[in-house]
Length: 509
Image 1 (cartoon, rainbow, N blue to C red):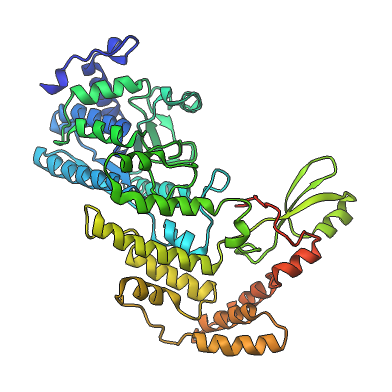
Image 2 (image 1 turned 90 degrees about the vertical axis):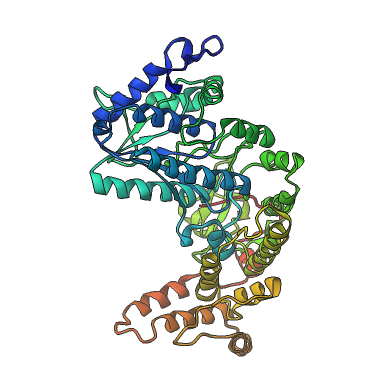
């Protein structure tokens, strides 16, 4: 039997201390004693593959009457994963479900993805969120934590509680070991408390494995669902990379440092994983790397004024400054008021820039659609989708309702790049067009009134047209009028900011 293989690793290996059957026995005992469904986080990489394989073999050995609670394998697809990894993930999940059904096992593999309002493109191109960086990593919670937790909470609501089985290892890093050691265990159990989800427990069966132990196991014990672990090893060699784990909370390590992950990731300066794949024969991915590098370039402090608004999405203008003694002040709304209230002088004021400008977002959408056509023609999948139709509809909605895009640019850009028309939704109560915006702009210019402010007010009125209760319109109008509508030049003059760009580099969530 495969599960009776005797493994021998290097000196200090887990397999010199414990037999493989002992590890399987521990998993069986933990499963039976928990009495609730298990949810295994699977990313397609070495650690999570090891966990799924260990659990699969362990539970398959048990009498079927003891295998009562289902085991769910969930993989997070951010919708901007590296295409090679997505193919590997989809193939593996399909094989898992087929083999589990054939073996009569209560194992189900699922893929979870962010809702259309939370996707990378809906936020970056739609709302104008700047490319993520170390100080403003807005993507992780929306695209990874929330989809995984939503699935977990649904199972917890159905069964009362679940056990999260994760591939964390203490040897990954000193900080990881500290977090795993500090996690409180349930009394008399191998399970730990989940520090966010109260109805979830955590089990880490390979916590004491080294990276050599992981590869020893994978290369000596065949995949129970028919996969080829040597192909996985080859994928790692091709990408010269590490694994991007399923993220279920903010303590899980991110996908920086050349790990498998999103091809759009700008948290690291260089995507060495994608560079290695291209160097090893995946030349069709070069346009993806170039697009990613273009997004990274927008983080250059000296260039932010070319791409970013001077105010936040809330309509506020925020300033960063320092006190005379060097204390950093973030998020000031009024420098003069601060100095009056504190009797402190401030120096070196800088503008905290906001989201990408709409014209930049239009350029990004145009480039992305062009790249999609290119990789469909040159890559292995002629149907490869970098941005979905649902995301295009969401971006269009955001631009129309929040960013005063009366030109209705998304259908125009899509047709210009692809030569095709989508089934765009028509608003029954009518929408404003570029013609109306031109008339409005002329009137506003003649009366020294911000055109976008009036356009936003008109959009608020349009959205409540036909509603039985219109009480909320007054709050909407008040919110619009409280926003900052003056030009950047006027703002800089008021707050005594230099009129020339001076390398603002602050982010504020």
